[in-house]
Image (tube, rainbow, N blue to C red; front, top):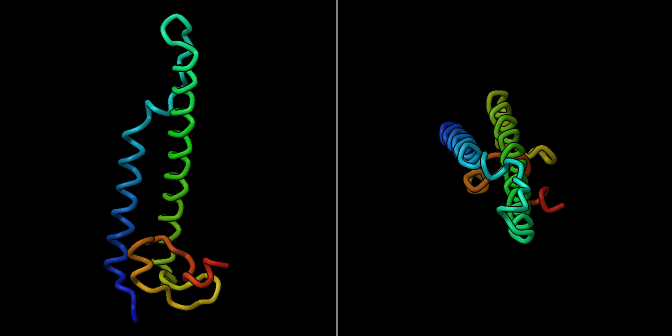
Length: 111
């Protein structure tokens, strides 16, 4: 089975756009929480801080995935895309359709 490189490029481009769009939608939720005790109660501040922490964690995950997209694009240019970095076997296209940034086959990823 051979990998459809045009489909791979499109998947990676779509993933990059999705991550960048999600990141652009949420900058306010990652902003510092206002601690004005007159306008917000203690529990509300705690909720706001928890939501802020979750938004910051989601942004870190998006940035990590953007790096994975860049690495996959580099592998694509170098002709190494779609091959397991551990065993060298071809990664099945259905796996790449689910995770276009996959670096390992299922067998090696489970180790």
